[in-house]
Length: 123
Image (cartoon, rainbow, N blue to C red; front, top):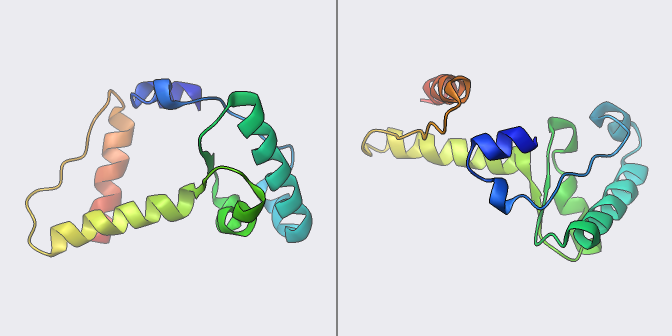
C-alpha cells in the first residue's frame, strides 16, 4: 500500500497503514463484532498516526465506514463506495458529451490500462 501511495504521488498524504487480522470474509460473518473491531482500529490509528481521515480499504469492508463513523473522531471513507462514485461520475461526463476523459498515469502503466478498461466497460 505504501508503494502504491508513493507511485500515485500521494505518499506525503499517507499518515500510515493499519491492518486488522480477520479477512473481509471473516468480518462479514459477524458484522457486530466487525464494527466494534474496525471502530477500535480506526480510533487507534487516528491516535497513533495523528490521521485526519481514515480510508477503509477492501471490498469486504464496503459499507462499514458509515456503520462506524459515529464511533470514530475523524472522517471514515469507504474506498469501494468512493471509487464507484468516481467511476460513475467519469462515465457520466463522457456520456453527457463531455470532452475526452483524462486518466492520469503516475508511472503505473497497469493502473492506466485497468482504468481505461474500467471506463470502457462503463460507457
